[in-house]
Length: 215
Image 1 (cartoon, rainbow, N blue to C red):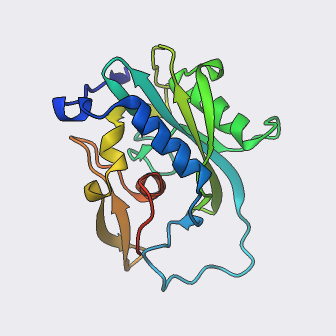
Image 2 (cartoon, rainbow, N blue to C red; image 1 turned 180 degrees about the vertical axis):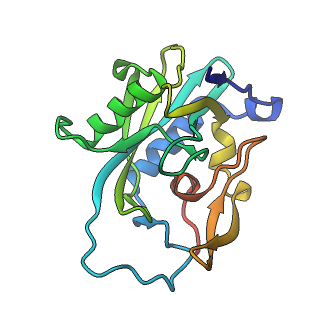
Image 3 (cartoon, one colour; image 1 turned 135 degrees about the vertical axis):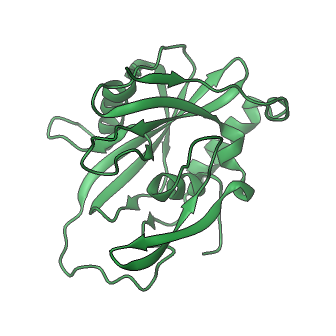
């Protein structure tokens, strides 16, 4: 049975007022940064010539609760073909029936965590992110003001949990780490939180939310 973990903010985090953070998010969306990719920290990567990128979208769900703003994330099921056990946003590839990438993000969030689309106020988009698996991912920033009960989609999502928004908005919480991939050491962003190791594309997209940086 999938577990749902809703973690409370610390006293220090409660000192940050939600309206200020919401204004910060609006400013970030209004002043977009450059596109990002899984290769940002590895400029020596040579991409296959003529490769085709598939459209996808993820929702960055910011949940306004009594103790502040929280980011909702998922832990992918261990049996998934791609990225098993990794931390991810609700999201996936665009289906033929999706009118837009916003529709893709909202549909996937409904399927993966039982988030009603009517509960989401779309703030706008973050820069497109290109993945090593040849997806062109549109991150969609959404605010949830209504209450709902997160439910993990059986077979795809092992866990749904939250992270206090101030944690991922603080650039000091981000690390640059490395591991071997296909015989070569590659670097990547990480923003750990408690028992959750948030890394790769998810951490790179969140780093864009935290503001400009020097690579």
